Amino acid sequence: MPLYIVPTPIGNLEDITMRALRILQEVALIAAEDTRVSRVLLDHYRIVKPMISYHEYSGAAQIEEILAVLQRGEDVALISDAGTPGLSDPGYELINACLRAGVDIIPLPGPTAVVTALVASGLPTDRFTFLGFLPKKTHALYALLQEMQDAPETLVAYESPYRLVETLESICAVLGASRPVCVAREISKMFEEFFRGTAAEARDYFSVEPVRGEVTLLIGGKPQSARSWTETDVRAELRRRLEAGESRNAAAKAIAAESGWKKRDIYDLTL
Image (cartoon, rainbow, N blue to C red; front, side, top):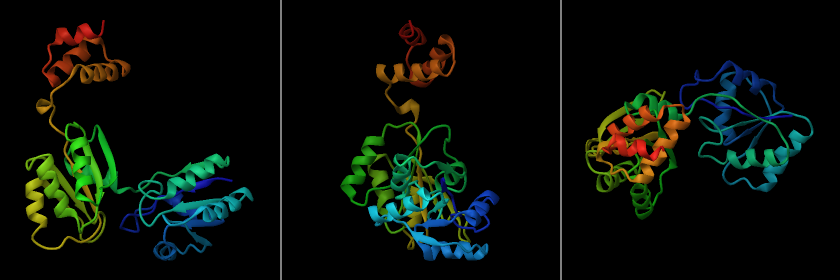
């Protein structure tokens, strides 16, 4: 029988699908990140099911216990405290163990702070990179920001409210004070807030009083006009556009507008 990956609300308890509620009512066991947190949701919808805790400190024995239920022919639902299991949480270990054991995985679509914050940020959504939880140590954060400083796509990350101001200061230092950012706080909850502005403006705004709640941080990519395109960059973008079905002429023209390269030089690379 399958392991269902069931997203749960990231704030407002109404943000759950009818299918998710049906699955939670039908499975034999619910594997929850924190059974106390999940009990609030289940009680709200009058769902009474056995639960087992499965979190980042769960060991192999806990995975084996869940696998044993599945291998007896019973369904199991995997849920996290909020959002989609397996995304920056230990759910991926259980999922991989189930795949190795030949257990079917059935994912349900549903809430995630990453996409919710992205579409409301005002930053480009055509391409983005999810960085997970940002490093706690400053030198590691600097290294990550330096690695991503020329990335043209929007960056999305989770951050602790207690480190937000320090992180914004690091962004100012590495990516520049004028780099656009969006701080999404307490999404779908009573005190939901979206701050949109430069890294320096966000740092100053959140320095006034302690930051509270769940934070998703979005960072605008480096403008293409400010990026120096190498031949490797041009070839990679050419490959992407041609594989997507664009003509050589259209691809060369579009890349020339973005990169500053001559259209003829780009076209020649396609030959």
